[in-house]
Image 1 (cartoon, rainbow, N blue to C red):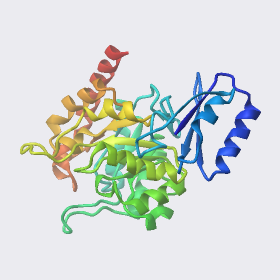
Image 2: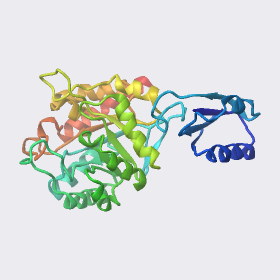
Image 3: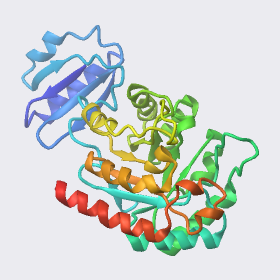
Image 4: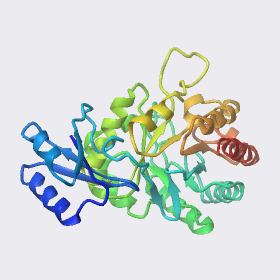
Length: 333
């Protein structure tokens, strides 16, 4: 249920209303927008008298929300949310470019790539330290050492770092990570999502390989319901009948997620296609679809990469792509 307050409603009366609703065991999500304030009622609202609420002189309207996701729902929060990662803002008109290698391999590699993508216009540096791999024999990442190398690259460039967390047990290692990524395989790791809600740091939540948009939003709901509103959604392709691409990039998800939710939405065309030459056209399409950011894998030596070299752009290719993405955004502005 949502309660829309009248413009310039008396603050003291509004506070009393919130206290009264909380006394009924309800959680209250308060969204203060430019033109109106919305109270989102979370919990068993069957005992709430809608007619009584609508009769209050500070209430504009009362509506029931049928969707099971509440905190992420645009009805609860009409204005776009803006997630801040250091000095970088994502959402609400703020666009970000995230780039870096699939996995951190050496200090020279990650620092070289970090400097290159920053020079090209990237806002954040991505790099995997903990790598969930389909085969147990593939490179699993440098783990804690990889996190330290990412921090060195951040110190060299000033770029906030984005890296994947696979287990709640590893949270102490991520205290100094700027944006924690939940990968596709962990999208429904609900224990991890709840812990990230308590942890409080910004989270980039990737859509699972075969998950619906509603399931993605419900996973985001786990994080937000646990107290963390700094969530970014990521479309990274889903498994379909495609036999030539790694996945199918569902770009229709971008405007639909914006319609359903106030959270920022970024797109990862690298994992979606699995082929480096397919990444630029899909990145441009993502920008045209209204994405709030694009995350791309970049490696200084893709042929010898320890992970996903086939989908990684070279630094010069990334620099050329950034200019094209900027041109697309200028056309749409």
